[in-house]
Image (cartoon, rainbow, N blue to C red; front, side):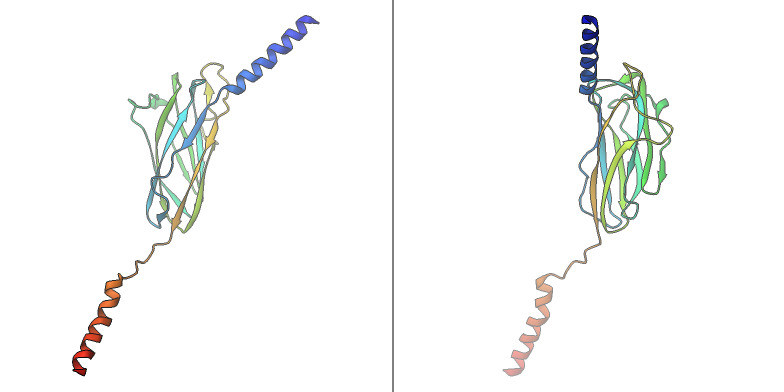
Length: 191
């Protein structure tokens, strides 16, 4: 009975320890918000696998395809993000979804890094959320460099607002100038 109790306590401690390992991928604040239709917005994508290194995996970004259009994604230089380019996935541009931003390294990737930068173009007025999640593409889930099992990753997205182009109103001086000239002309005629 005593051994059973020790095994149960050990299992509970292992469960709590596994839950403490946090892995996260998130979007930075947008480079501009709001943007105009046909304007561009960039987000840095960061990761933090400080508690447990990953061999690699991938994620998707879902957005409102009526408001934004995916333009490009660029990984950070190898010197600042030491991934193995052989792990890099082929990103699919689906309407409203950037699928399979995947990367990895057999030595494991840990710690905080900026993965790269993603750029969108505003194509319609409105607000688009950007939701990150496990990929449905070929890269698959992130795999632990310690347990070789799928990891739980906390994803943090963002949003951006696209506004219809604002037509600038003429300056007050330009509006007032014709009126003042007309009044000046009327005054001369009266004199």
